[in-house]
Image 1: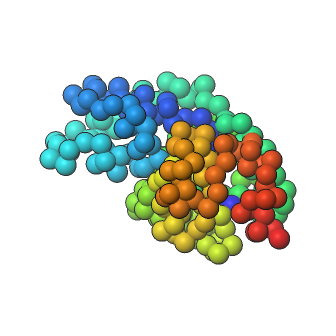
Image 2: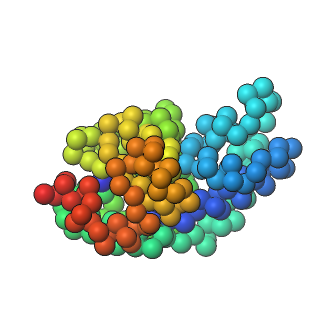
Length: 218
């Protein structure tokens, strides 16, 4: 089992969107928050390319990323898991599945997310953007996670909340279950290629025996 973290297990997507909005405003860019939210899930390099003009002064990108991080860190001590997140991980582990986190967050940020999630006892591995050459929607992070965990695409399932998670999973040869708790609706996730959608980790955990995950333990 591969899990995205931001917006899938921990309630961070709108905090990221607001932090990026303010960072971009400080940098002289006016970008609607809705557009920013729909880009959350990409790595920061791809996010800026997605939101800003190609002919911008790219030398300022590092300043934008630093401003976003500074703003986002103010929320770190208040981050909360999404409903049923830890229970879902523990249920999967209890059924003999290897639980792996595959996130586009930095290694330090992933540590903060793991503390908020409070389920390290069942997490067997975790990869961050520091472990891969390219961020989502490229499949590099997922490929590294599978390689380090000894998983194969035909015996694994990804759970994510954004179209970028679904696209990365598809490029890695993985089936992806979509959760709408990150703010992307079920129709968009299915159109991107999600095999199933659920409201949040709690609903997926409740319906685990009818999900694509059940096929891994059957």
